[in-house]
Image (cartoon, rainbow, N blue to C red):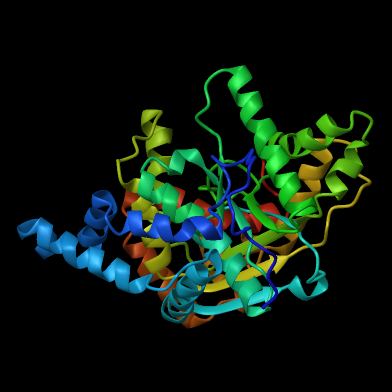
Length: 393
């Protein structure tokens, strides 16, 4: 496996990104030791793995969890070793929760080059995890992952994410000046990672998951990416600022989304009540549901780098959308949802649908409460309409 140096072994005298960057190798042992004693993490683990013991004897459950964590990360002293431990769980997750995992387009990208992968966003942790697994299988280095600070409300979650090469995207900064400073730092870090460290990055095409199944790139993200280049050279052409980042659109398609019901509930509540109240542990529950839930077939498609012939953030966003939507794989679940809505029947590719596909879809639909069905179905139907250029909004 080819690896760029994820870390120096000595702390750097000046570390401008210390509060947002992933952890470095020399920090790993201390962070893991801290996590093995973190009561919040241990409580969360026991709630999922030892629920009865956690209820009746919390200290004993925590002690068992702490022992398990220490055993699991024994001898782990680098980020790569930490990720290799995760890789075995990833293999098991793919084997037990997917029917197939297909990767296309990666072979067209230079293994010696770093890229900024920008992908559609359906699952909090799985989208970049599948990208990492595809790279790992191809004997390439894993990516640094952009993650919003809204997901990092617990210190142990922040630690785990930064151990797994995540860096922090500021979403909670208040005031224009604070936001601008935060985005300048973020832009500089991303540029430094790709152009200086030669280390690839994954980030989502927009803030938050596409809960309605409509994948669209936010031009504000593209604007943010060019801040660092324009700051260091005021005369730089916009297209050149984009080209140096080697921006590659990535499209991930799930036959079934393990969080489809929760997303439908959120869309229903916003539609009927005007807002959605997120519960305290909802993001963590979504991560667990995504990992453990049935996904059917999954396809990951790597696009081609966006060139220097782009003049505006809107043009770049449109090109990312073109590649993401073009590379999106439509499964029978998508066509069956469109059929169930009675919408655009001419777009339903009936010949691709088997009896097993229909039975599986109907069984899943039967478990969806009546009030949530239009929202549940729309998540799957919208990609068909989007690909056909038939979305009205």
